[in-house]
Length: 212
Image 1 (cartoon, rainbow, N blue to C red):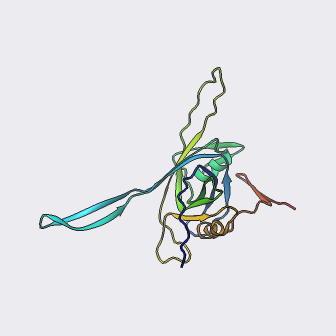
Image 2: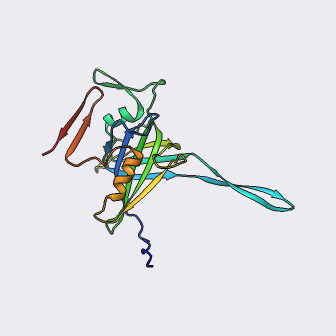
Image 3: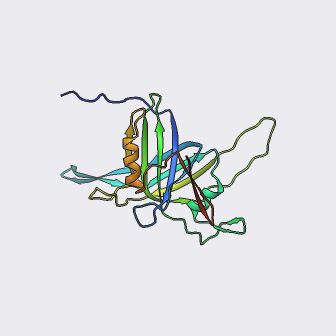
């Protein structure tokens, strides 16, 4: 019986950052994309604890730390900040305050490879925190800024699994989308957004336009 050849290619890019509000459930209210993802780091710390006896190790156990995500974008649109951070919007003005209550969201992003394959990473439930505000004077040349935002994620119930999970992975070869589509159903409870349907969300209304 032949075994499938292992893939040792390293990723060379990131793409397709999606998020959706899940609250305390497992089905997202919507799926929204933030374009122009530049970098993203998912920190999944683990510590090993040892128990000793008779001058040697008697037992070891693994302790899992908090899942932390740091992502940088060319720009995070204000509409996405309003949703991710639970900001109040009134008369065209967006407000931040000590009583802001960001919603639980799920996210998915893709790591891309030179052979055309993609590895999708799903995080089923977490909270985003307010990004740092910064600016810089324009000098002789043009230099584009970027925006960074952080989040922490937790375990959540996923259909088909007995135990709650905090991270999920799916890999598709070039031209394939089977595992991507399955991951979207597991993380968002909704299918991968069709390219023929564009959803535009504002603070007050939601309009969906279907293409031909």
